View 1 (spheres, rainbow, N blue to C red):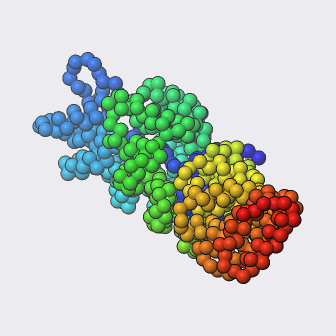
View 2 (tube, one colour):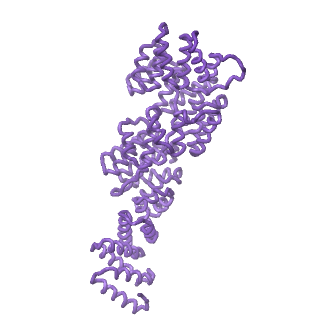
View 3 (cartoon, rainbow, N blue to C red):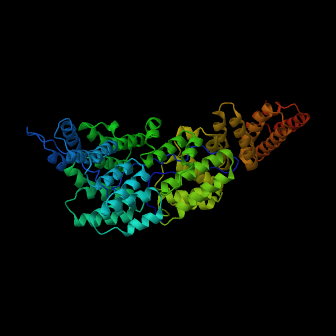
Length: 584
């Protein structure tokens, strides 16, 4: 059956027992940050076009045009005068909140409370700011000081979600009405809980009822983005961008869609429109985060650590960066205390545990990883997606059930033909089930040089060459390695596998055992070398091996100071004399 293309997450790369796993498990799994509406005072909207007429600035025009920067500048100017009153302070807090400067908005509301005589709703506004500053307990207390009503319930509804208090969440959920603001709050909670189809249904219904509310197009586009309908998301988003071509949130979402459809370069090109309009891309946390993603992790350690407390995706992408650079302990530390709630979090926690488990030999970590992968792969929402099937393959990989691994990876190989991580995993799994020809073809698709230099890759590829009766190519892999423990291990693999294969592989078994014997005078290496030599001689006698091979074999034999050597040489030379074969 076909699989839906979800995000670019990759499964952990594992190997059969006794071989280490490189920490590149989540190579492509890079996540884009997008934000949903919360149903609280809006944060959406583009900077309005500047009024070209030369007239005294009007606060209400700034607010109507959603020019929050202009409104704040005017209000701050007015605050220096004697006519600045509580109403203007309220507008200052409102404008700062809409611009996303919640600390400044909170200061304005604090001053408002000091004036006295203001309504209790100011506590709700403070609660909203505290919510966005992630001070959820304080936000709850402020909300409870405010007057009961829709805004209080929506704020408490979202605070309960952030506090993971399911009882309170359901209590406030039951108080929601069919009012537009309440339905926006409900859709946002669905979005934040990864119930993207439910959020889409609500946003689409609201859009049908409120055609003039263009921001709803962005919410619908965000939900379709999360459902992997990137073309649909772009089409709906274009409606909003026609009216607000300089919206940071909308252009960021457009860039994210282009990243999924094309690549990071195409995504970054979309953000150039913001720079051309005078926006500083490095002043916006969301844009800075996504530029790291679009640039394949560039400046990750400079940007992402400072965003972990504000953007959930920043933590996940930092974990991915650590995994890709081999800092498995750092990646595990970031995920250790996270209670996963999204497929991406489950996958990354599984990857982190798999890497630590394979590098330390911890069965406990491997079991945890296997369980996380199984949870994602067997879930109704993910079972027919590419990451879902990769997760099931990873689960079976850790259980060493490679026949099942092949079933899942074969179902998605058409989507990941050029993915090095996928070809690594699939090639090893095919080899583990004895499908040597297919395994060789798949491993040779790997292009990343760091992968191709890894001993695990070289050992599996060498084994495939030998099993496919191409021992010379396996020998070439050994010759390219510098002298090291890994080259010694590869030499042992070539010697033993070639000996087991026999036939035309005996010659390379003899060569490998000859080198091993010179490096380590273990009697077992002489026995292997002697047996391989006899095998080569037998193949020559049968006419299945070039007679010239005997010269090389005799030279190798003379490297050994064993009384059996002269006896074997005499027998070979006697046969050569009888059959007119010239040997040195």
